[in-house]
Image (cartoon, rainbow, N blue to C red; front, side):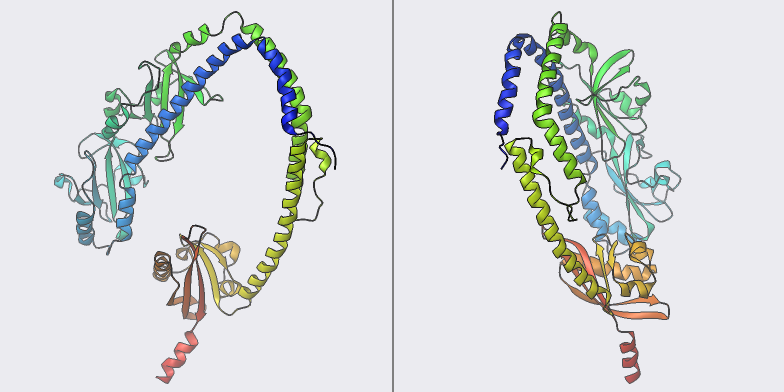
Length: 477
């Protein structure tokens, strides 16, 4: 075996050389690190504030989403009166300033949870946020109370719609107490929508007027390695951290601080020794870089390139141990990688045999076999399915029954499969589907497939054509 020096000894040698030189500049370097620490702390505090504000805002917006979705899924009918009575009974009172209302298929309001009965039968279909047909609207002025709101849309059966109106003013008590540590109240935090309209701002007038602040933020830079950027507002330069919301899409959180608030601190920790420290650090970096490149970077790069080019499923050889460059730990990495490649090849050969066996069984049966995900999208079909419904595996991928069959037939398939996923047990159904020669009847056995957590995430079906048997039974009767 090639002699290898332990990695920790190599690192100690490199750090010992660097430490001797670093001691000469320890005092001045401490000052420089303090400056870096100040910026790092500021960036981290801004990130923490962003995370907190986004979580609170998203939680406020989504507060009733799961409940309403579950209620919609359990709706007993698409009759308007049934829907109204159902939500009256099952949807509790909302938070202050929030309410919901229901539109029928013509876009007219048939129910409201608030005291706005005068709007009953009012046609909402011409309103911009209704026509946009989005799950979450842009900020708009409420037609009920003229305050800025966002509206969450939920589709109901029968082309009816439930709209949940959330008051933007409710964000004020949630977010006003959040601040950035050590800024003496000089920090400015606000939220803008995708078009730049103020969602939240300490100046509440900007919220109620739906002021477009985005147009007034000038000279915005790209984020640096800490995630901080700069912009100019009313002739004053700010340093800022921005973070996008995932929901509602397009919203941006800004945590900002006037640049003049941090410049004096930075100046105090630099000064005359800046150029000297810079030169010394460059010199040290060059030495360390050379050492690391020789002992670690180059060997690691060679190993990385070899791994990226190797074909673990093909019998194309293994990684040579010489790439370790005399480092014990790299030698151990190479040995482990080679062992893993060998195991992958062996496992792949076994899996190929199993796949060939299963595909042979599926494609040579007279039954129709297919598999879908929990949303009803096709993942796999056998040859019998392709021949029966004149569609290929490539064409059907990610399609649902509604893309292939008439709506009434697709409804039956979907209802049966949801029942199987909900109960988690195999079930047998009698189903019908049109083929080239007319309507055929099938006995379908549907069963769930579980993920590693024991949750059904796919469904498999084996369908047997019993049309001729039914016809014969009918004749005998």
